[in-house]
Image 1 (tube, helix red, strand yellow):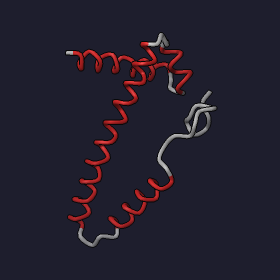
Image 2: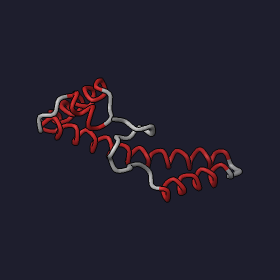
Image 3: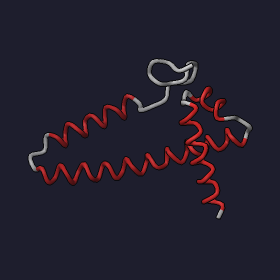
Image 4: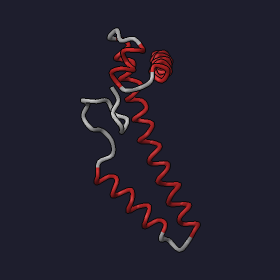
Length: 106
């Protein structure tokens, strides 16, 4: 069962820590206070590159976990129920995970 904040009921709370949220808020405030719009663009571009690198790692981690669930015999419906994803999204991710595994095996 999914709770109101999108998590799975009974699962540990996961997400950005309060310290990380505060650091991001501080970065946004400091960057917005910059007088030079060109510097704002450079700063934001650098931050977005850094964040995308971490998001790629999180995407790989999620696909690996989906692959492990499938390898363990979980159906798309099982994955949807256990993760709080829709069945459609579970199937999409399982498909992407299978492609990723094939691509890395070659």
